[in-house]
Image (tube, rainbow, N blue to C red; front, side, top):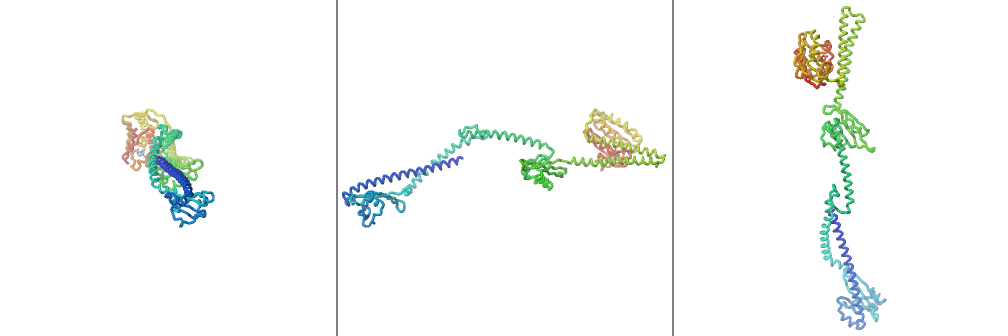
Length: 544
Ligand code: ADP
C-alpha cells in the first residue's frame, strides 16, 4: 500500500509539473509573441512616417538588426530591403501581408521556417504613395524554444520529482503507519482514521461472529473426536473422491495407518479389491459391505454414501470386529450338532432296549439287566439335559444371588454325596486344609466341586484315592487315576470334549462337566490350573 500511495503521488506530481510547465510556457510564449507583434507594429508606424518623409535616405540609415524592413512597390517589386540586395529579391506581390495591406491598408502574417525552428512575423502598411512598407522579425518557434529549454526543464523536473518522491514517501508512510498498527484481532483498540471506523466496526462484528462459529466448530470437532475416539468400531470418513477426511484410532489400528493418512486416498491404506468395490458400490448405489480378515481377526465393513442437497459429498466406512460373533456362531452350530447327537444316542439305546422287552425278545433272566440299562441311559439323559440347561443359563449370563460360602463345608457336603460311589469302586476320598470363605453362588460352586470330584472318581483306578484340599483361597481335587495325556490338556474344558468317549459314556459322563467348572470359575473370577500325567493321576486347582 505504501508503494502504491508513493507511486500515485509521484505520478500526480509529475503530471501536475508537466502540465504546469506546459501551461506556463504556453502563456509566456503567447504573451511574448503578442508583445513582439505590438513592438513590430510600433516600429512599423514610425518607419512609415519616416519613409514617407525621407524615403530611401531614412531606410538606408536604419539600424535594423532586430527587425528587417522591406519596401515594396504596389506591383510587388522590392524597392529596398535592410538585410538584402533588393535587386536580387523576387517579386513580393503574392505575400499574404502585402496583398492584405494593398487591399485594406495594413496586413500581417506569420510564416514558419521549413525546419520549424523559427517563426517570422510580418506587419505591412500601405504608404500614401501606394507603396508598402513591411517590417518583420524572427522568433524561435514554441517547439524550438522547448528544445532550447530542454535541459533546464529536465533539471527542474528532476528536482521536483525527487522532492515529491521524498515527500510522497514520508506522506505514504505517515498514512499507512496507523493502518499498520491496526490489530485486526482487536480492530477497535487503536485509533486510526475516522473514515475507516465503519469498516473497523464491521470487522469487529465479523471477528466476533467468526470466533463464536470457530468455538462451536471446535466444540463439535472435539465431541466428534471424543465419540469416535472411544468407539471400538473403526470409523473412516471419505470425500467423494475417496480421500480420507477423518479416521478414528480403532480404524487406524485396524488398517495399520498413521494419523497423517488424512488427506490420502483410502485405497492407499487398504488396497484390497473387495474394499475398492465396496467403496465404489457405496458411492454409486448408497450402500456397500464386505467381510474380510485383518490382523488375524474377522471384520465386517459397512459403507454408506453421504449426500447433501442431492449431491454425493462422501462416504462413511464402519468396521465391526465380528471375530467373537463368528466364533460363537460356529460354537453354537457345533454345540447344536453335538447336543442332538448326545441326546439321540441314549434315546436310541433306551428305545432299542424297550422294543426288545416289548417284543418279548429278552430272556426273562436278562430282563432286569435291560431295565437297568434303560434306567442308566435315562439317568444319563437326565444329567445331560440338566448340564445343557445349566450351561445355557451360564451362557445367558443370568444374575444369580451371591452369599458367603464356606468352601470347606461345601467340599465336605460333596464328599458325603460321592462317598458311596467312591466306595463302590474301592476309592478313598478325603478332605484336607483349613478351608476359607468366599462370597459367591453356592449352587454353582457346589456343582463345580461335585464335577471335579466325580471325574476324580470316574477316571480313577480301583483302590485309588481322591484328595480334596481347601485352603489359601484354593480348592484342589487330586486323584491317583488314569491321568490325561498332555495333548488333551488344552481341550478337555471344551463342551463335549472327551479323551475316551466310551469310558466317559460308560461312567455316565456327559462331556459337559469341566465346561461347567470353567464357567463357574469364570463367574467367580477364579483361575483353573490342571496338572495331569497318564497313569499317575490328575490334579485340578481353582484359585479364587
Ligand atoms: P465327562 O462327562 O465325560 O466326564 P468332563 O467335561 O467332565 O466330561 O470331562 C471331559 C473329559 O476329560 C473326560 O471325558 C475325561 O476324558 C477327561 N477327564 C476329566 N477329568 C479327569 C480326571 N480326573 N482324570 C482323567 N481324565 C479326566
